[in-house]
Length: 184
Image (tube, one colour):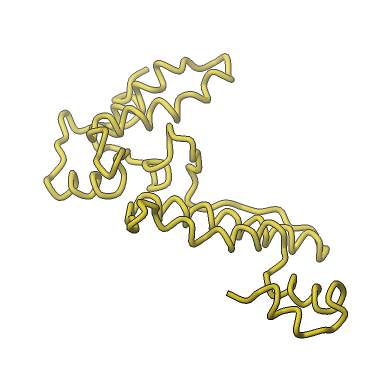
């Protein structure tokens, strides 16, 4: 089976200059802020990653599926969604633009799902800030600004909640202790 037996394809598709520019800015893998793949490399990476699931099923051949998917993309007959183009074949692995979350009818389940969503959004934010590649004088990117939010989402407790607990328990209601322990 070939891609042309699945969908009629354009015999040879070429990307416009604007299309290449969009791919370079948003989808091509980067290293030190510079693209390390071209559009054909992007299509190959995505096709290989999407076809890799075929190893788990006896009725499909991964190499054949990879070629079919590559042909469909390189002919511009079919292009997957943005998360697939950005993440397939990388450690990120998030290929869906949306996802369904299981929520049971309990406060524990509701808050657990909210925590999971918050952590997923923080992962997406971290990746976006990392890709933006803006660095401070120390050479750090902006992802460190999310560290406190990761801590809150992971533990379910804000610094204010922790401080209030200290005030009520450890400090015995003594407000002076906040100045001692949190002074700059």
